[in-house]
Length: 245
Ligand SMILES: C[S@@+](CC[C@H](N)C(=O)[O-])C[C@H]1O[C@@H](n2cnc3c(N)ncnc32)[C@H](O)[C@@H]1O
Ligand SMILES: O=C(O)C(=O)C[C@]1(C(=O)O)C=C[C@@H](O)C=C1
Image 1 (cartoon, rainbow, N blue to C red):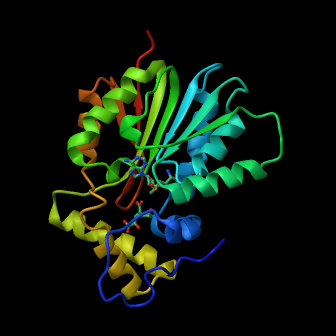
Image 2 (image 1 turned 45 degrees about the vertical axis):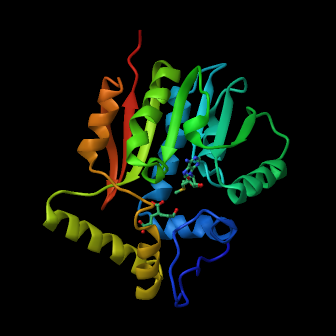
């Protein structure tokens, strides 16, 4: 796995963070050293696939990057389900296509790749939808509409996983959880300069919201039940369930 040292050298001007070729090349290393609990969340997404993915249904991995969740859900999905892996980054999709073509021709369900904006994707007959650290990159004013489209595409009894970097209104709580996250990055080998340049680059691009805002919005779009199931510092994963009919 290539090591992320994108922000290791001083940049004269730190540009806006993009999921370009440079990032795609080091992405598995970058995300596992930046998001505490990432591996645990992925492993539970696999477990959720075993529970929720139904025969003949669609599964959506929205903002799939290199397909970490897609590959794990594929281990559990029935053969006649279809996983739709969706991302608007050409660099990510080219690599994911390559990774899929290297998979042994085994008895697994098909994976369809869609290089497009997740706001434009028609969805239907979904048993499981995953947004693993993706909604935070969608403009706030578009988040409700996207989640509503997810809700409308879901079968009764289906599940949506929403993992996000979150923020807190209480300044002390915000401060302490941010510091603990920075300690995690330091312990994973990032220097102060890397941390600070990446923070500048993510400003106005990754827009965190509170757990209450996320769960409230999920309820507003129709999910009867929406709650956090995992948290490590300021990184949270939530589950939203559509009731059985
Ligand atoms: C933090 S990464 C997601 C990580 C991935 N879900 C995983 O579990 O490894 C966010 C991804 O969302 C994609 N993305 C951001 N905005 C998007 C949009 N409007 N439409 C499609 N993909 C988008 C980015 O290209 C990036 O690959
Ligand atoms: O908040 C940070 O410092 C991060 O690096 C987080 C984060 C994310 O949550 O998606 C941002 C960009 C990269 O995709 C990997 C991790």
